[in-house]
Image 1: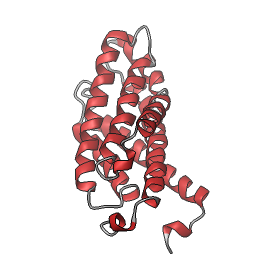
Image 2: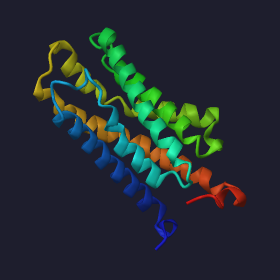
Image 3: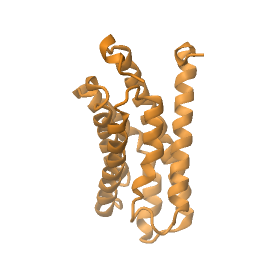
Length: 196
């Protein structure tokens, strides 16, 4: 049975569910790999499950070998940027660290995918992805509010990260799937000959 034969709402629901599970697993992995370390030492490889899931669901060419490492780099940059903003402004504007990281993440992920699909390298896709990344990062504010005033890490604030990661990866991952599917349908026949 081909994926295209599955009704569109069911397909998108399944994709969103897969990215939700991936986000929850990533957060759980981060928190159980040493609770005293996160977020002070960002785990660079935490982005690998999301990047590989994007490769499986979104990228339909051999060029995924370029996009996946770039996605890992985007994760690290966006996490560090959010951490940096949070260090200075989390007490005053708790939603800002997550939104800065979400903006960079959404924007950067589309840039990464543009290595596979050049049509994604447009202001429309880049800004929409940045907006989706920013909006879906708002749940991180609950964690920032609970974490920032403490000046030390307490286990009771950690569960707030699980839904934040799950929501962000579900929304952004599903958006990436949607735009890659749309662009993939428009690929000329000579380009699709190189598709997997």
